[in-house]
Image 1 (cartoon, one colour):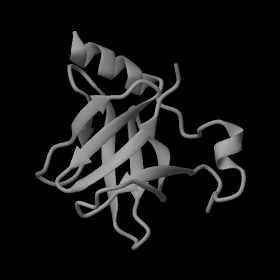
Image 2: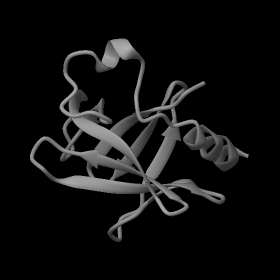
Image 3: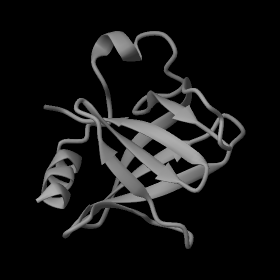
Image 4: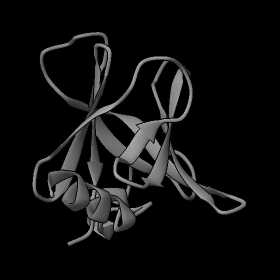
Length: 115
């Protein structure tokens, strides 16, 4: 049941938050600034960007770090919701209400969801 709720939340994942969050710090059209905690840092900062990409019938989220590194996540995976699209380390996903926290190794991201 928990996986079904998380999977449902990801179908509602939006490429943009509300307009107030996107207003000034947006680096490029179609991306959203998100909170991230990289390399095991204790706190979160609005330092990463997220964009949603459609390829054929698959949906992906690309999260970009300030240093140019990035992670790709596949959306809508039956029974899982979101998985790491590249690499051996799998994403751990926790629903936090209005967002989900995604952890891969020592990096954590807060991805917005629409209610």
